Image: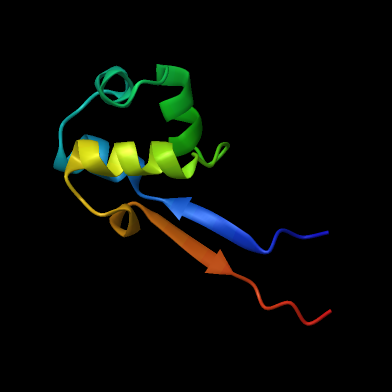
Length: 76
């Protein structure tokens, strides 16, 4: 069964290009490990709503600026 949606994120772009922040600095700000940030950036882990909000707040942007949801039509 295919997932109903795919989450793409722009965390890495915001962290590196717009905020010049290391993975560890972001992890410390939002209360997770560096490995968690790495997994989010690589798309291996979708953060909880709470964590997504904390990441957005760390960058001073709305959550929608970081995460896009591609919904697939369910024709089945």
